[in-house]
Amino acid sequence: GLAEMGAHWIHGPSPGNPVFCLASRYGLLGPEAAREENQQVEAGGHPPMPSVTYGSSGTVLSPEAVREARDLFYALLASTRAFQGSKEPPWPSVGQYVRAEIARTVPTMAGGQEDARRLQLAVLAACLKLECCISGTHSMDLVALEPFGEYVSLPGLDCTFPGGYSSLAERLLSDLPEGTVLLNKAVRTIQWQGSFREEGDDARVFPVRVECEDGDVFLADHVIVTVPLGFLKEHHQEFFQPPLPERKAQAIRHLGFGTNNKIFLEFEQPFWEPQQQLLEVVWEDESPLEEPSTDLEANWFKKLIGFVVLQPPEQHGHVLCGFIAGKESEHMETLSDAEVLSAMTHVLRTMTG
Image 1 (tube, rainbow, N blue to C red):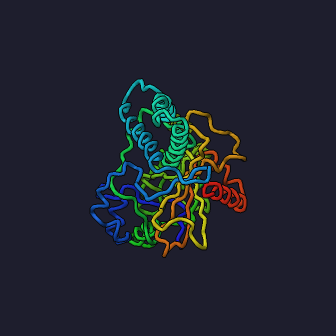
Image 2: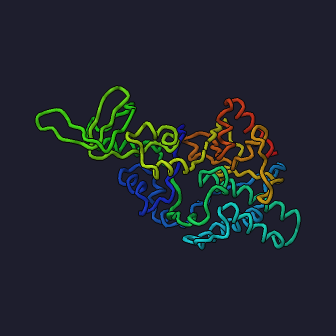
Image 3: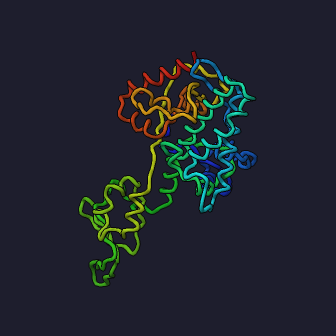
């Protein structure tokens, strides 16, 4: 089957989404994605998927309790829009604001029943982990509260490319003249603010000179650079000649980025029900009001939000895709496949009893 190592879905597939419009124009999507009613669904960035929520006690958690906690969490996220443009938001970060509001509601949570309250707090902790994956961060404490509401979620039920996300790039490339795109052409330096003359009788002067590792040179009026932020942090001083203005260099130094990883597990036979598309995991001893463990070696797998069932099984087989973000995700990258598989087996056996 097909495993998307990078981008997975078109989020918000509707007429306002240029990726969706291109994919539709090129006929790259399945019939469900093209249905008008699917394009009108307002999911708020959290598309509804038939799911089951497993607790660390080895039982399936009450859907009502999970829904109640999730509704509270989404209401708190929605309330962050009130601080957009505020010069003095009540808290610096989304995480601090959400936890403060949760603490304020604890006395009335779950009708005051202690066991039910603990369960709802555990579900809220899981919601924060999911939001870390969505925002691409280790902790929502690293996501600023004031601009958080600027993000606009387009309507539409998330959809995938039956032929893989790369089918869109391949289709776009096919429209370009041969030789327009050069692959495996690493750039050594970009010299800008210069005067570089091309050879020939009708020579022009260009302000930008791009020098490649293999010695080839390209002259240009303008260059758009789309390298990853991590590359810029490490190489911007020598990559651009002259160096970038200090305000841009400072922006590169201060900008942060997180780590998201996928874990694919293939089974000969599914242990989940055919209608289930998402298997969520909740560690019932956790709470957003308590500091999470910093022992990555012992507890990294607890940052896992759960597993998406790859659809359709006729194409993919019986495959689960787990998602994990942050420092725990980076720690996982240091482990062998056997160690990751052992941890995932432990999680699934713990959750399913």
